[in-house]
Figure 1 (tube, rainbow, N blue to C red):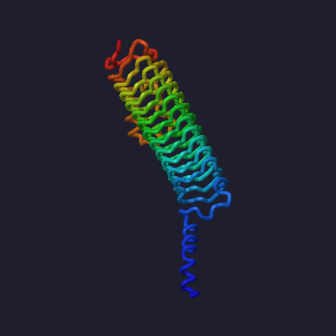
Figure 2: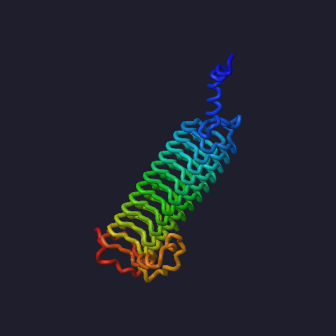
Figure 3: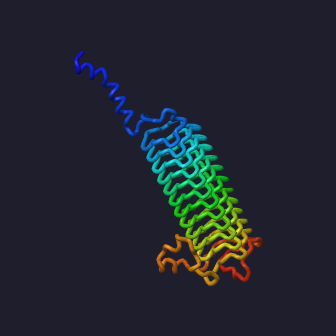
Length: 319
C-alpha cells in the first residue's frame, strides 16, 4: 500500500486527535471526569449542554469555559475558577458554589435556586433574569453585577456587597439583606416587600419607584438615596439616616421614622466611611449635604415622625 493511501486511511484518526487536543473540545479529561473532576483543568472548553448533575468540580479551572445550558444541578463547584465563564441558562439548582470565582461570568437566565454561593466573588457578573430563590449568598461580592429582573425572593444575602450593581426590576421580597452594602446600586422598580435591611448601606442608591412595603430599614444609611415615588407604607425607618435623600412622592403612610436623621444640621457628613461617598470630590459631597426632600410625599395619622421634627407644609396628609 502506498504512503498516500495509508495517509488517506489514517486521516479521520488524525483529525480526531487534532479535535481532542483543541481547548474547546472534551479531550484530555481525567479518566473519571465526569463525574469526578476535582482540580481538573477545563479552561476554555466547550461544554455547552453538558450533563454534570452531582459532579465534583471542586477547585476545577473553568475559566472562560462554555457551560451554556449545562446541567450542574447539585454539583460541587466549591473553590472553582469560573471567571468569564458562560453559564447562560445553566441549571445550578442546589449546587454548592462556596468561594467560587465568577468574576465577569455570564449567568443570565441561570437557575441558581437553592444554591449555596457563600463567599463567592461575582464582581461584574451578569445575572440578568437569573433565579436565585432561596439561594445563600452570605458575604458574597456582587459589586457592579447585573441582576436586572432577577428573582432573589427569600434569599439570604447577609453582609453581601451589591455596591454599584444594577438590580433594577428585581424581586428581593422577604430577602435578608442585613448589613448589606448596596450603595450606588440601581434598585429602581425593585420589589423589596418585607425585606430585612437593618443597618444596610444604601447611600446614593437609586430606589425610585421601588416597593418597600413593610421593609425593615432600621438603622440603615440612606444618605443621598433616591426614593422618589417609593412605597414605604408600614416600613421601619427608625434611626435611619435620610439626610440628602429624595423622598418626593413617596408613600410614608404607617411608616416609622422615629429617631431618623432628616436634617443636615443633625448629621456630621465626615463621619461617613462608605467608599462610595468618600471617593467623591469635595464639590459633589457638598452638593449632597442637604435636608431630606419630602415634598409631595404622603403620610397618615399612623406615620411616626422624629421628635421635634417639623413636618414640611409640602408633605400631604392623607386621612
